[in-house]
Image (tube, rainbow, N blue to C red; front, side, top):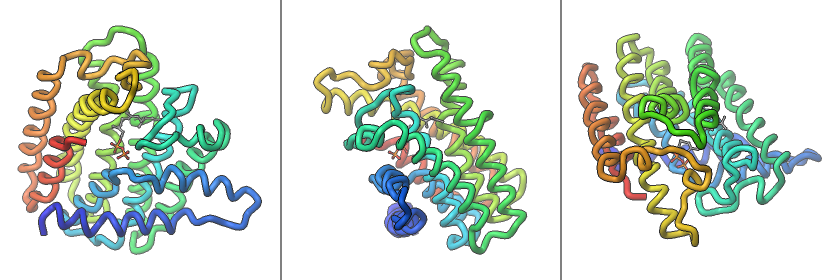
Amino acid sequence: MDIAEFIQQSIPKIEKQLDLLIPETKLPYNKLFQAARYSLLNGGKRLRPLLTLVSTSVLKGNLDAALIPACSLELIHTYSLIHDDLPCMDNDDYRRGKPTLHKIYNEGDALLAGDYLLTKAFEILSEAPFVNDHQKVRLISTLSQRSGGSGMIGGQVLDIQHTGKPIDPEILKNIHHHKTGALLTASLEFGAILSNASDFTIQVLQQFGSQIGLAFQIVDDLLDVSKNKRENASGKSSDQINNKVTYLSLFGYNEAKNKAQELLQSSLDVLMKIPEETSLLASLAKLLINRQT
Ligand code: GRG
């Protein structure tokens, strides 16, 4: 099976599972679930669940067991986007072409929907079918580290700390290593944990994740600017409005593009260190880094 077929088969399963995980209720506070669904079922690329399913498949793990853990990553990702869009952070009005959650509801409801998705992610991991207790503990530990203070949240704090100030490439790399790379790395590690892979394989996937995480962020910076040139009257991206240093502002278009390609190439080299047939993962990395939208 090639990556296009794999994605075509996997996306409907991920979408269906996400829909089932957060149903509407008859509770008097049903708006919590409606708000969470508004952001969760809103057309993301589902990249993190896909990375888990592809890494599980490459390492010959059980794909049925991987589905709920894969979705837990999307819950965390969605919470981070909701909180990142809030007025106290990036103050964004639109996400994926639609009004952000706090614009439809209000700040308090959006904050709580994010909190709910965050806690729900760990709830579903602790109850995941076909996953043994040892694997559950490793998944929970990995997700809390990668999304917490030593990962995504740490990266967000570092980002805010440096907003509006000149920063050098090493600091920018460190911000995105934490903010973007950590959750992508967790997605790959999930596949390894579910497949009982060796520590060596996990280390290789961590290196691969870190490199594609940075390359993905560079491409996101480049696409963000071209998208905003087309869609905004100001032609400015949220990063530009918020006075944030990006790979584009630091290196310029051509050098940033070259950097993404260099990182992609070194990620593919790293992948060759494990004996398994990894072409599905390599193809997904190429798709991500060469995407145009
Ligand atoms: C608020 C705790 C907290 C963390 C925020 C992830 C994050 C940290 C902020 C989101 C903004 C941002 C630019 C993050 C970098 C990661 C990134 C490129 C996110 C977009 O991910 P995609 O492209 O999004 O996978 P879709 O819409 O496809 O789900």
